[in-house]
Length: 139
Image: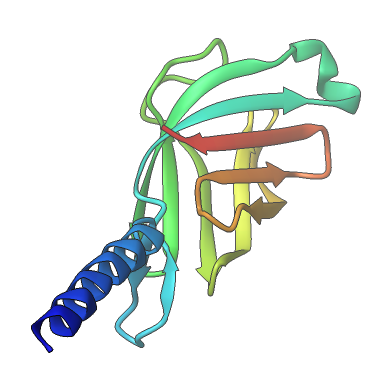
C-alpha cells in the first residue's frame, strides 16, 4: 500500500513539473483566459523586401511589455534609423494569436501588419505587407 502511494506521489510530482514547464510563457487574464506572456527581451531581425530591400537586413533587440492582452515593444539598441527607446511594435492578443499588430518604419509612422506567433510563444513574425517583415525571437 505504501509503495503504491509513493509511486502515485512521484507521478503527480513529475506531472506538475511537466505542466508548469508548458505554462512557462503564459499569463492568465482576469477573465481566466490563458495567453502568451510576451514580456521580456526579444532578438529582432528586420527583413526589408520589395521596394525597401535596398536597406538590407538589420539586427536589433526589442523589449516587450504586456498589460493584459495588449503589448508594446521598444527598441533597446539604436540603429541608423531610430534611437534606443523608440516604440517599434504594438498589438493585441486574442487567445494565443496576435489579433492586431502594428509596426513602425523609417518612412512611415505606424503600419498595420499581419502577425504570426509560434505555439510555444517564442517566435513572432510581423509583416506590414508593404516591404518590411520583423522576426522576433525570445532571448
